[in-house]
Image 1 (cartoon, rainbow, N blue to C red):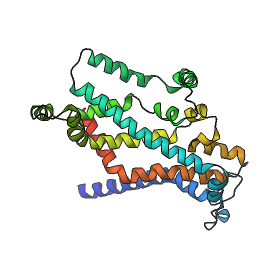
Image 2 (image 1 turned 90 degrees about the vertical axis):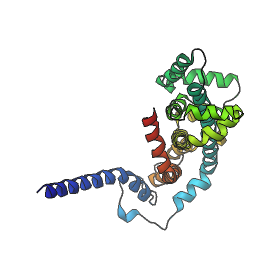
Image 3 (image 1 turned 60 degrees about the vertical axis):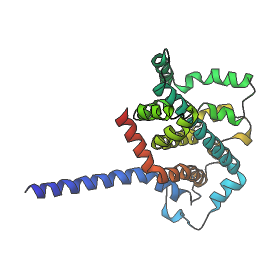
Length: 273
């Protein structure tokens, strides 16, 4: 009897998971199907779908400046991931493994900046960037991605790195920078991959700051270029969905290849923190 109840509950659980999965996947399927139409409404009709017609994708890359925006997004994302990992890992190493006066107070103040919405600081940052002549540059698009979240994430993981291991390396005469590069970084690789995924998605999907800080169309990122498709080409929702599909595919591919390390890094950060 118990076995029968377990079987029924497992079937119901499986059905629930399937329904949930379909609910999550349905918008992406709709987006892909819609990108092969020339519909002027958001109503998807099967007779309008033509899988051999790639004119929407061709139009996106050849006539909308989308290719340049894609290049800008790739540059900004790659630089953001690199510098965020470098700065966050070095700061986390200092806060976790070094002893200095006011360490916890400085760390708490730094982490507290996560509570301040980006919209609050956007105007002051814009004024600073303007006075420094940094608007319409990659630097202005990259620097705001570096924040306290990466330090918080990596420090919680780095707490599991044995202090004895680092002390033994010092006794053997290993310089500080080699300890960090050759010992600490390989041990925190899972959480670095998690941070890369977080940074990639955040930077790739960022819209408001690139819209504010870039007035030159040559510096537009993918999200800004995507927002302009409707005003430039009327109400061709097939064209808009083609642009959205291109924007979606890159973070999706990244997560597919790094999902194991991503989940491992998040899980171990929670356990060791």
